[in-house]
Image (tube, rainbow, N blue to C red):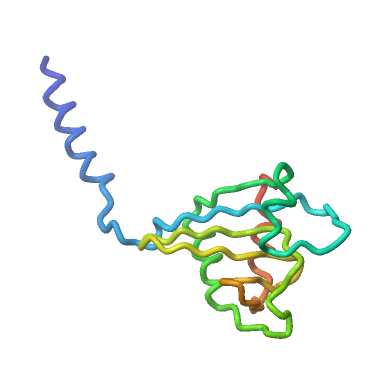
Length: 140
């Protein structure tokens, strides 16, 4: 009985320590990446809208939990510049799904080059940081 009082006090204090200070932090963004295994080829290019239909059973999904990786991915996407030369089409090999803390969602289609589709518009990444991140995730 004498141990219950300190135990409850400890549990009470821990509930404040683990409580998030601000519910609207960018750390609560969720990011998942869906891609096909590298080296897989197709007879023709796959556009973003066909990706899910064409690769129903061959896709790998990973959920990014690292705050550092989330920030890097979001920064790389936000720094992409419009690239009209791609005519809003790429040979899609993966997608990034981002759900922001404010409820907005973003779908980015990835190819084998630094050109991405965001909101149906072709953009080019300043560097291929997203490709580097994806290819170095140990689960793939």
